[in-house]
Every structure is written in structure tokens, then in C-alpha cells.
Amino acid sequence: MTLTLNTEETAALEGWRLANNIGSPDEAARELLRLGLLSEISKVYGLVSAIRHSVDDDEDDFAYQAPHTPN
Image (cartoon, rainbow, N blue to C red; front, side, top):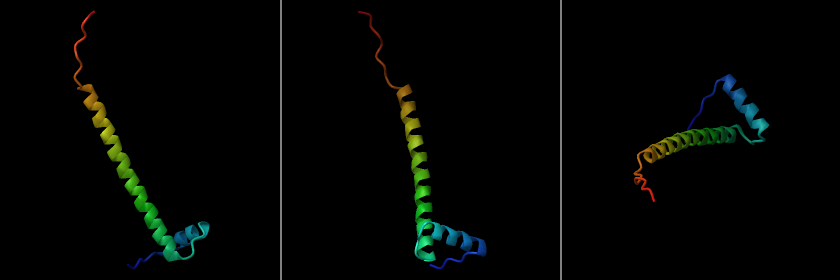
């Protein structure tokens, strides 16, 4: 895979690489890609979890409750 960056992107990658003590620009690009993918996966997981909790809460609203019988 070939990745072409403009001057601003190259400077940002280089600054991030140096700030994080990463050996090469290629390694820095791979790490940033990995972190970005993990971030997106985390967002999707959070959305799915929120939907699941919402559905679970709605199901509780419709749960059968036995009528109360006085003693």
C-alpha cells in the first residue's frame, strides 16, 4: 500500500512520531491507523451497547407482573 500525504499531513505525522518516540514514519502511520480503527470500533461497540441497554430497559417495562393479592 502506498500512502501519499500533503505537506501539512507529513508535518503532523512527523511531529506525532517524534512526540511518541516512534522509529520511522511508516511505523507511525501504521500506529495511527491502528489507533483510529480501534477508536471507530469502540464507537460502534458503545452504540451497540447503548441500544442493547435501551432494548433491555424497554423489555422490563412490559414484563409480566403478577397481580397483588392481599393477605
